[in-house]
Image 1 (cartoon, helix red, strand yellow):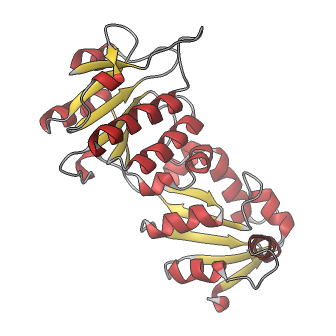
Image 2 (tube, one colour):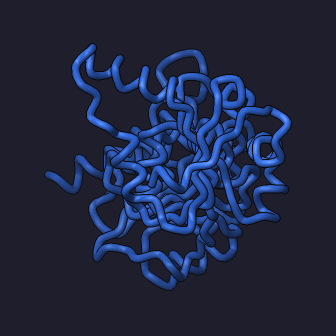
Length: 281
């Protein structure tokens, strides 16, 4: 892999400018069909999920320091070598200076590794569901950080998929990837319209449970043992009427304080793990 490496020492390099633009512009990511990924853990999860890499940017002083820090001074275990062994042969490998890396990096502490990765199309018909699926559905989620946190909970709960209806953010937003800590690659995540999602769930006899305060039952009194889709809306406006009408049951989390709502990612975790509890029992 060493002989494939190219060196970049100028922040004015066209490749460097392109990475910066891809980090900042969702329209450019969509147009070029790629996204930017930072950090060893995230890159490893991405490669293990079978994504194809376009280019990889390495900053030796930074990743060597990260390895030594993690091993507390013991011999580094060449995690970079492990990553390079999984990279597709068509990818270009660059070595960059700390100054160049700092220019490209969207966030700090990313261990001297940045990758440009080819996007994938995410379609409902491509989902491979289990016999008794558990699905989290989000309507018009506004904050990438919330979606990333929900993906982590979905991964921990063993959910089959997260479906984002009428999304206001793209699935490869840097903040989403960061907050998911790689769960965007381990949990199937689909973007589609509300109408498409409702038809998909109804055709497969997946029970729709909508989280809402009005006309609802306590979540732990509702059966989640069978094929279930838990549907949540935004914290500000809740769910649309289309979801309320399509629901098989309305559920709520009891609120005992003075405020009337939890963060959507916290609520999602509570409901996902109630399903896990019921199924394990």
